[in-house]
Length: 236
Image 1 (cartoon, rainbow, N blue to C red):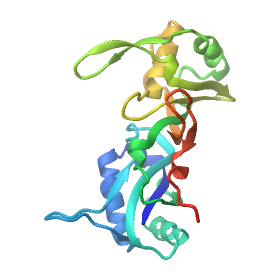
Image 2 (image 1 turned 45 degrees about the vertical axis):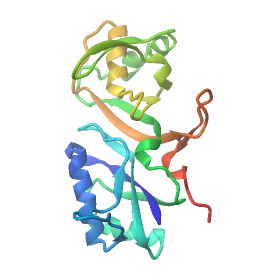
Image 3 (image 1 turned 90 degrees about the vertical axis):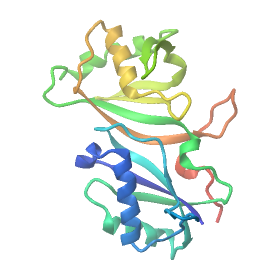
């Protein structure tokens, strides 16, 4: 049985890296006495995979992992068992049973929602003034920025990778491309916006939170974004 589990990452655990989160869940599954499947071979390991790693220092209301189990009492029981083993900041929210041929959450990732706020006490305390030009920024035909990698630097147009960008109260909301091919970090959008305002990018000023992760169930020409928990879900 394949299961997709949605969980949060809040508070101090935002400074725990992706590999340590993976190890933590491996131990938590054992402590919760979940009948998880193991791979075959000389060094068997739990069959478990995660969605795209969350940047260090970012919080999230929507992290996903896939596991395979031999048997469970119920999805509600699994959530309860896991949550008894969770540390502060990590809470299992959902558990979805998947079809046997469902793709793993990492390969499905196509987009993600983020909310950005200005950290209290920083110099950009006036939210309304700072975000006032966000629609002028987004309405540009192109949003060109130099994207650096370990080996090179190239110009990239961010506009096709931003599906939505607007201010909601004191928060900036963005839906951006995410995954293995066209992965857009929200910090890169913020850097481009600061350059549009002709100001230096103020490090450690923004608080970024991931709100949801989506897969694309549409075609190459028509995007249809669906939350990962609902893609490949088995019909009861």
